Amino acid sequence: MKSAALRLLLSAAILATAVTAGSCSDDSGTSTPDASDAWDAGADAPDEPADADWSDGDPGDEALPDGDGLFEPDGNDGADGGGDPAADDGDAEDGGGTDGGEPGDVDCSGTGQFDYTCDAADPDTCPGGFCMLGMCIGPVLDPYRWADCGDGSCGPCEDADSCPADCGSSPVTSGSKEYDNATTITVWVHGFYNKSADEMASMVYGEEDDCGGILEEFANFGINRPCGNTDATRTAPNQLIGVEYYGGVPAAWLPAADIDEIEQYPYEGIDALQRYATIVAKFISNRLAISGATHVNLACHSMGCLICRYMIENDIEGLASSNRLVRWFTSAGVVAGAQLARLYDNPTVRDGAQLLGMELNDFVIMHPDFVQDVACVWDHKLHAGNNPLFAGMLIHHACGCDPQIQEALGIALLDIYNPTDDPNDGIMFTADEYFHSQDPAASFVAPDGTTLMATHNLVHVDHMTVPQTQAAALMASASLFHRRKVFITIDQIELLSDREHHDALDGEHGDPPAEIIAVSRVRYNPYVLDTFGQDILVHDDQLDYRTPGMFIQNQGETLSPGLVVFAGPVFDEMDSLRLDLDLHEVDWYPHQEVREYIFDHEQSLVGFHDQVPLSDDTITFENEYARVRLKVRLIQLH
Image (cartoon, rainbow, N blue to C red; front, side, top):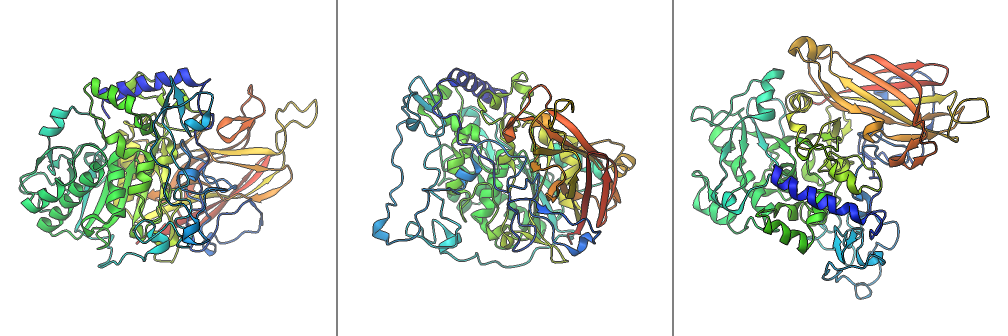
């Protein structure tokens, strides 16, 4: 995203500061996303932490705990973010269902046309948005329209086209995935950037891009593949290559039939996503054909990740159903839509953009409502990768969590109106950058039978900077070219002292029970430092970033919270990683609705600062406040 687009977003966000007192909704439709992650087929996320068993056990004998990133015992994911994953995904608590009864008893007509006018005194006139000068900015329209899709019952308002998860059948697939061969190409799909109408019209779509950015950085981490942008390398079956999907001029290699198909979908408005995905898919099909490659790794940034999701779920060019796509790495990806795009869901904002000479049609297709309708076609769950076409794909997400955008003078755009204090990277809420769950039928099954869903790490930089970091390049290298994932969880904790206020002389603040978070930093040292000469922080999860998950525990209690400290791909040659982990009792954490004592946000409970061997193991550490057992699982992927 370039500076021109940021100027518009900055202007819109600054205007939003005037509406805090008169907003249509103090909630803005935000809640914590569901994290019932499919680690083990048939396993459900616990409602509460289980009572602990301190007996030593073989970690390999147990299923991986539910929850991927930062698991919370109440079923929520700690690195959550803006928007309303529960509402957007249709998980209504009441009033959202339409299944049951006779078809004649159900109104399936939808919500009708919204006119974008509102009354600041009447929140119902601007649902989920804010009202400014009689204009509704960023409404959330009909959040429960997909509430029943994916519940296992084909309701009267559903059919095989609208909800294949309930009314259709699983996609028919062919071929098989191969993860360890010399015939896999790696394709980079760039993100959104602003351009004028003239620039857009003159750009060449389907043109190969260079191998800068992450593709270029692979060489720094031992991945030496040719860039497929020369006559000599376009036929390399293991090439790295980027693709351009913007433009009004077709690339020379595109046949007339493909051009006609693409041109059915103009790049202005809602057909743009189909157009972009078709261009990317045809480019991939062409490279497979001319190179003899058999499989594809996908890597992407920002809106490019939405294009990838749409391409996979809609099976463009049959790439997903033929099992060509084997791995997917996203960096600050628009996986679940961009909440900031709701600002563009208003005629006045669109008119203002045009007056400034800006073409921002991509904001239409990044709108979460649009993404839910047309990209998440299996069950319309924004934050869940449940489409069976994801089955067998190795997926990892690198997520940003610094709200201060360097290109916008360090202003935290999304924090200007962020009533629930959600973590974000300035353009995207962090929760919208990764899958929170996957059904077992849509997950990856390791050779030992373990079912794994997508993993993610946190990088404390802004949205545009994520793919430029060494952390993203390192994790992309491990994700796309290596064979193992590690999972480190807090398996058991005995709380000896809760560090809450019990009497006048204890010097503590806050009320029991204890609200406990785990802050962590992960480095792949000594391997990365010794091998590549770089000291890289690959995962950074801190209270100041608002990303840690939280669980509640009473003093004297022993629990099994199952909180995942870190989960992600590792290099084949690594035998350990460096973990700096501290458990804190928090008295002030508004993102998790803890507001006990603002002058002393956290108190240290216990910490671990050492190497973690990459093998199935348990690690115990303790002090006068707590005794903790970590569980380490190392999964051989292929």
